[in-house]
Image (cartoon, rainbow, N blue to C red; front, side, top):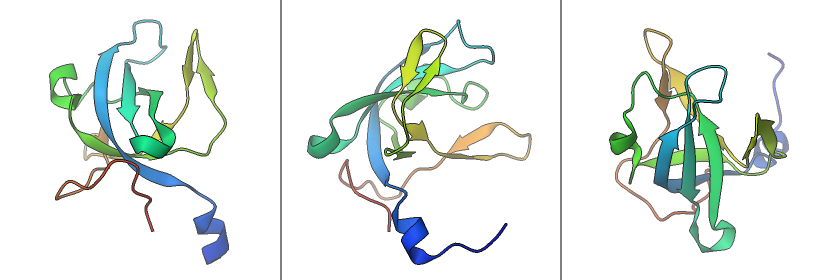
Length: 112
């Protein structure tokens, strides 16, 4: 990939949020969950579709802090509109492992 400038990087708004709700998304072509993520007082609660079913049960997602790109245009996934892009890395098996923080930090914090 071609190098980017720091200005390019700063245009990507990555925030920390807490998953407050998760449910199956049976209409998705590939197994996924519908998530509601609290991104703090400035952004509020946003929804996202995430293909994380291989590594995470719904119960394990509630209360988990995740990183999400919040300044992409909404993406329609079937009848669902994904408002943010939850970030993850491929595990050794190719399943998505969510990007999170340790220790917890305030919702809405911006990555820099």
